[in-house]
Length: 161
View 1 (cartoon, helix red, strand yellow):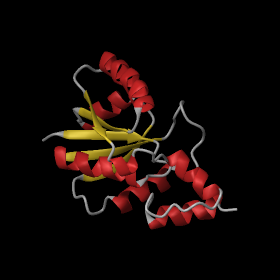
View 2: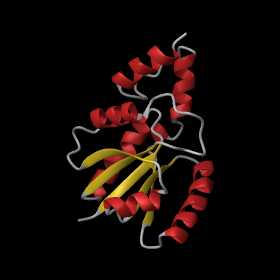
View 3: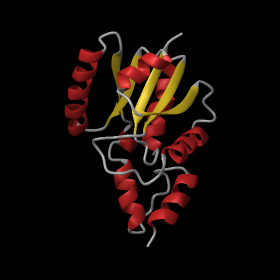
View 4: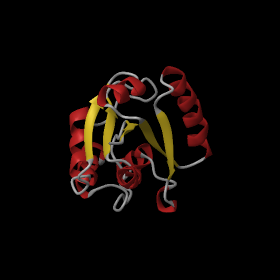
């Protein structure tokens, strides 16, 4: 059985994330969406980890081999704990590639038995990021089609002016 983790902050999950998760679920027997609960790279999340996990569970309910779980350790250590042999990430642009190349090499140094796998974003999602969606929501922009209806409602509640 092949198992993979798809790590990220998912603050909030976007349709671009869902595209990568869905495609990963076609490639692996089991996919665990790993929600970082202690990022050193990003600012404090808008949504608590349990709400982000709930968003993911709702959005992936139709995918029988996908689950979500929080993590606050190295992703390779989390992957080992859950028995995953791959870390799956999406790539949108050159800037993603540069960061992910660095992370891949650091992860390989920690755990050379866990492979990094990258899926190119679909063209309709190549511009899409959680931070961009939050900015649109803050200023009343149209976020329909970028996130689920539930996420859109919560963003409007939290960020709407």
